[in-house]
Amino acid sequence: MSASSTSRPVRLRVAPSPTGDPHVGTAYVSLFDLAFARQQGGTFILRIEDTDQARFREDSEQQIFDTLHWLGLNWDEGPDIGGPFAPYRQSERLDRYTPYVDRLLASGHAYHCWCSTERLSQMREAQQKSKQPTGYDRLCYGKTREERAALPGFSEVPVVRMLIPADLDTRFTDLIRGELNAPHPDDQVIVKADGFPTYHLAVVVDDHEMGITHVVRGEEWISSTPKHVLLYQWLGLELPAFAHMPLLRNVDKSKISKRKNPAARLTWFREQGYLPEALVNFLALLAYPPKEDGREVMTFEEFVADFDWSKVNPVGPIFDLDKLGWLNGHYIRSLDSGELARRIVGHLSLTGVLGPEPTAEQVAVITVATPLVQERMQLLSEAEGMLTFLLVSDDELVVADDARTQLKGDPAAVLDVAIPALEELPHWVAGDIEAALRSALVNGLGIKAKFAFTPLRVAVTGRRISPPLFESMEILGRESSLARLRSLRATF
Ligand code: GLU
Image (tube, rainbow, N blue to C red; front, side):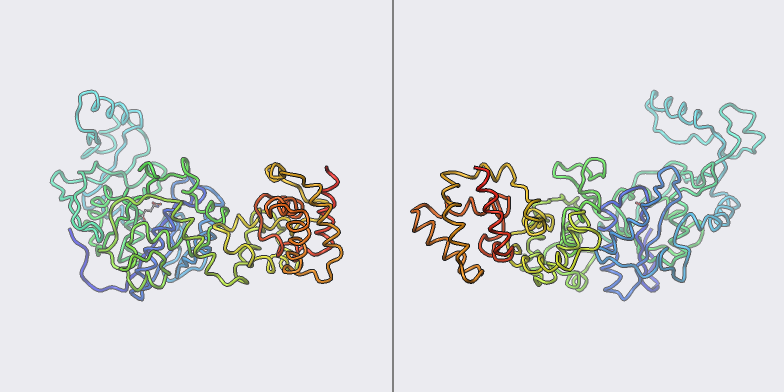
């Protein structure tokens, strides 16, 4: 079994199921799809596989759109934008599968099965007990409805199964792994009792009708591929190429799942303050080697230019959040500070620190303060801790408990000297603030800088760790800075 050799226009798709918060694997597969599609001048398609009604979640489709757009993984055809092969939602394509099923039934490659779920589980149990291989025993095969109805375990509404040949060649070629051999499959159900196609039928029909040339999906589908290849052959359809992406693993090597790991959820990365370009770079590196010189920072454009299926590493990559944090810090530092300020504002708005429409004043203060924090941040979410003191009024400022414990020595004496020194300062600029405080406290009081400045940092920012103190005071302004120093002084 090998992929077709005719040169059709390159078309790839990602086919997520809207079953809740989008999985990071959807972005990972989309990225590799898109890189190849862009390199080949091809088309990238988003198809929503929503035929599993039991697992369907209403808002999940919109979350898929939003998170993929956020990552810049934009599709050329999809349910929201349409395209020449619409509809792109499986539930809207239900009538398309029937003619294919009829052909398979007519040619004898598929058959009806009336076995009830109880009968199937009894059969499976018996097989397991007697250590036989499990699989459908073909009780219904070759029987008319009447013949079958005379036997036990009959269910009124049949399913349709594939008649998998005993001598099926289960080998196929994978773009990443070369020749693969999957286990011999069972007589797969292709139409369920509710009349809905199963994934196996729908994926083959949709990929065929949408002209998909390269089927890229997770490694968990390897065992299904021989069944799909068989459907292509029985139906006389042109075979696409297959690429099975290595599964993402937790540090303990287990498969990454939304249930066990928050980082399996795409929305989590956004909430945590990762930059889309860092996450895209990280997802590429999960299965793709760094540049020849070992450089791990790689733009999407570089990835596209270099892309080659044979370089994709088939071994399950470990999801190392430390590496992602490091990359994120790198991307944060390399942004223009105005752009970083925009991202910080967006993030604080997303997480509810700022309202949905931040005020011009809030935006202005964040823009001025961003250069102070740019070197110190790995995640956009850290901006909240570092910049909140600029966004709250003097009365609202809360001094954190861990900041208060930093007050060693005699903070009241420090504040008693600092306040008048600052009141007299002619120009409220960072350099002058620092000079005045050093002279009054370090020289005047003869105490170490650490003891001198900690009470001021705690008073002004409420935090143990903050942007540089004197710049922070300059941005906050004289009046607010002094009000906060006086207010801390009053607590002693
Ligand atoms: N709906 C399947 C999934 O979410 C798609 C698998 C495929 O790409 O064929 O994994």
